[in-house]
Length: 261
Image (cartoon, rainbow, N blue to C red; front, side, top):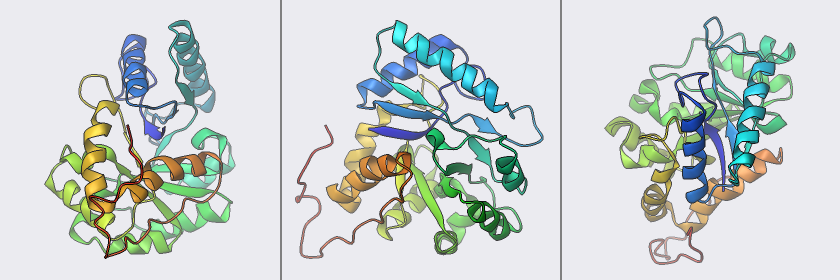
């Protein structure tokens, strides 16, 4: 499995405090079945959470070296979770931002309250430069939760959606849970990610329980698509595939052709 959104680098944002916590997160990832993850530290223009690409690469090298020394099997790739900001197109052009695993995909964080004014122009400017947008956890945005049909505008504008596994467990509140289910019911999910932050409570160990719930909502083939197939396609710099419409004659709860574990 591949995780495209996690905060695993030590001491750079609100993720793990030190290398020991990062390595514990690595152990949790491997036990959950992951072999590749993209480190996506917060990048918020105009704040102290705006590391240089060189600093992030240095932290990444140190973590991967520590993983090898411990004999663990997890490949951590470079990336960022970028705050939705009008400066993104210029920062990309100036080489100040990292894409996901050296692809053309940028992970942009959905604001928790509302999308910024003029977000359509920002999206257009990013796409016009040849990049693709993966929007992180839109189910947690209050504006979208009260007007979920606005998600269709995002998708029509060329944005792909990443939903957090644990949103289906209610870990981010009832509104996020309802929104995650709405997106699943309407085929609006392109991939799932852990958005892991620490080894105590926000980590990959929740994936197994979330997978069982998600499979009941959309069937095993769709779960495989957004959990395994599409993250791989994104790292290969190809377009994620849309969710499939289940055959109404098939009981998706009983029609599993494969198992996650």
